[in-house]
Image (cartoon, rainbow, N blue to C red):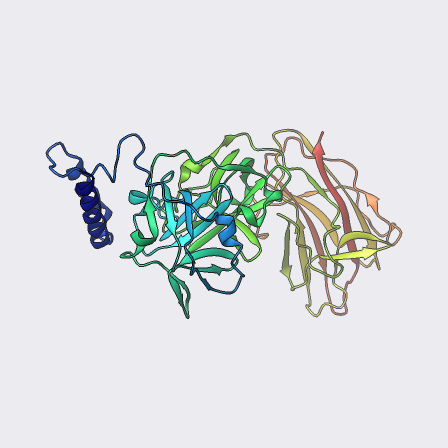
Length: 446
């Protein structure tokens, strides 16, 4: 019986190698036929009862040990008898993974490049596999360490479908894969290619209600925690959920952690990896612009810095060890200048107020005004509806370079989420060139 099962197993693997490129619908029909009571061939080895059979191949190396051999930017052939034992954590059923088999053991995870589709039928999430890595190569793509079959001018090659069974040995299935709970600000390279879970997170307000893959081959959306730490959610336009809209609630997200250059990014397997149905957390604003270098354009998380006329933007400045944002038309070659510095979205389900400080120098005109909008989309200033607010601002009677408080600006009763825009207008090169500064922008509950 053992010999018969061995022959049937070899036959099964040969058939898989021949038909892996056939339509999935055809494969499903074949599977249904095989599972039918009328079928005379017993394929219990491939779909065994009680979790399957483990060949118990001796494991010689951990994933972390194997990855430690790799030097980023190089390709190394594995010439010794390396055997890994791990669980499959990826799933290509929805198309968000393509010809990628991601496995994880207790020490870490790694992506295997294979020239096979429909991997979920053979290597579902929770299937234990052994990787006989001798003859494979270690490489990387923009910082992501991978296993492949060799190298050419394009990079690391996928393992051909006819050879996958030589390197990837199936064992038990239905094993529980538990994602590690992580926080966005405490990720490390050892977490890459592992299954992780983020709690108390949500899509940033500007990305709520967007398609997962918005008219691009690969779309990047941003997830945030309540401290406004962000991570990229990566989705393929070929995913079955590519045209679904992102939810607006707060909750948990599970996915396979990746990296591109220095940016961590998360790839979900399907929409069941998201449970974002809770009330959004209140993302408060407390911006003193301390992280903006002097003379650099203001680029803070979820803030928008937009030139409507001319090209000059709000910039970071430092005076007497104080960091702040500044707008001026001094030295600008454009005949007119209009620049907006706009806050992140502010939820108003709980009554809020905003406070800030302003200063001026070289006064020529009242070039600074403050506005509020509930339909600004993050990029189109002129397409949004803005209502002017009238806080206390630095003006002609204010001393140069002296910051004054705006007082409390009550946002109660304004449907949210809303964004506050600091609008500067001036002209150059020889016109109105007053300078205005903004600092210590804070949004708090009333």
